[in-house]
Length: 171
Image (cartoon, rainbow, N blue to C red):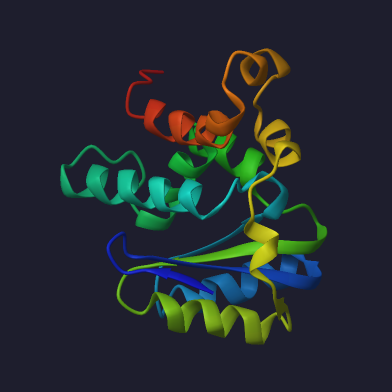
């Protein structure tokens, strides 16, 4: 589990059989503890990606620039690098069945919400699930041309640019 008090976000990778129906049920319950999201592990490009999305979502909410009514949905928009909520869900949402996911909670009781989800979904905690990789960059939508135009040591920052770009998108 990775907890970032400064950005008000906690995340954990989870392994085990997941059914979307179960995830939705327990995520709704976990939202009573803290705002939560359970997302595709293959499109989360590391903890910095999650931190950046949380930073931008909290800032948008604080400044009244949020598009979503709930922080966890605003966070998802930034995490996906998408302005539209539906596109963010399509990009980062879990399929009907998955073997791994990244569990994220925001706010004061974020650790409790992540622990609750891990327990209720019977997942093995494995933070390696959230580690960045070039395969995740591609799954996130980074093209080969973008990768070639970026120095290797800076490639994992490309999703951070997508997160920040949400503030600039108009439609």
